[in-house]
View 1 (cartoon, helix red, strand yellow):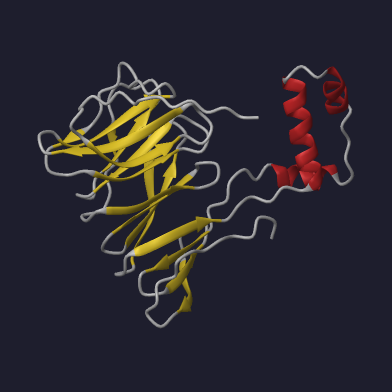
View 2: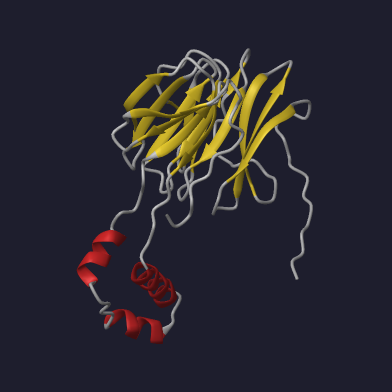
Length: 248
């Protein structure tokens, strides 16, 4: 049985209206974008008790507001997209948000990390799609840019597919770290069939390929190098959802 307790979030501006929120996928923190007539747009990061994080200078813009928030899938890194086309990033341990310089001049509509966070995709209201490489530290480097001239509605990254032996190795490692001595013994003597091939497959940690669909009903496939290929063109009917098969 699971119990849930409600907690009142302590906003820095009690008059602000919350517009967008996002929980970190694995850490007990979340971010909320707000807007008020006096301060304009702002973004605040809270812990799981609803208290703003200390020693962080949260961004405030007098005439623009945040339109999208997204977290790195594993690390405490927050990306924020704004209606003036700006992108700001917060990294754990940093006081200030850093500006990510990009080509966008209109509202950011989509902002997505790949499965392991090695690539970021941004898209704005004018149909400009940009791919970024995250260097693992604090830099987002532009890898490609496509002017599709049509607002994007969805993007979905391809997931990395692990073999059975790769999953077995991962589970053993987690159990060993948790103190399971039997799992540690098994991990030490682990010798799967075709070990070289399976371990090589297991080393593929991220997948940069993804699909993107537009307001006009066009589906694009963008591979890991950024090459964009039109796959489907509908009758100007928006594609409402796209999904990757989890195992194929």
